[in-house]
Image 1: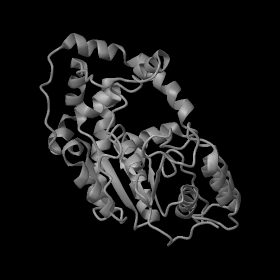
Image 2: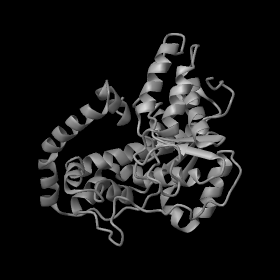
Image 3: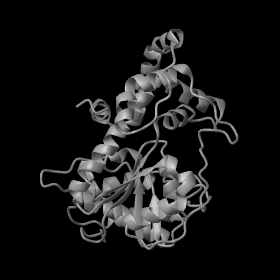
Image 4: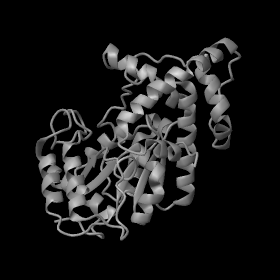
Length: 334
């Protein structure tokens, strides 16, 4: 049976991409009562607009259940903090079966929040736990929608400093083969990366100002020196019994090979400072000196048309519909 509206508050991990959301999801999954999972995309990129009465028909719910049953869920792979109910690639297993049963059994109209709770309940059944936490970083852009649907929702918002974010963003794919690394490299541009960080930063602080009771902002750079304290605060905020979770999941950075930490190039720092400098100063992030390298900046500008073409093709494959509207909202242009 579908979960009822008052069964439990929504608990979500959101925030900056490359900001530690995966690490926090895995760590929470080490809790004896918490099943932490991602990424449903339910409230953002994968959102299905309900009918005029604000609800989905049973047939719509079943179709969403079919989509969720095909999804590859994280965290998977069998390491610390992995979901136990999925295969090594995140698909199949008891979770797929639990999702299919839960959504096929729906015989009434459901609101989006009840539909999301149905998904959470299926995860809890499959994992044998009692508290669900969902992780999708870009859900921070849809906090208004989430909290309007459930005023008791609790959002842990991860925020990463600008240059560390840019380096991690730039180094995506380095742990994979040459084809994947080259694909990520084509999709990176310092102008776009700076815009992404600025948008995330402004959104994170706007959400925290608008919903102080619903949000807890975690600064990623504080984790190395205060992991235990941060995790205690997170558990208290999510209203789960506090357990000692520190050190159970390593803070590995999958973008940067172990023992190596490359430096940002001049064009990277230049565009981050130019595009996001005002935001950095407003929120107290220290700035590196702006490089005086016109040739590097010119080369980065010349690469923009090719970058735009590669990203348009990639986004077309990624977003099911209305990707221009999604991009407009996501970049805070509208």
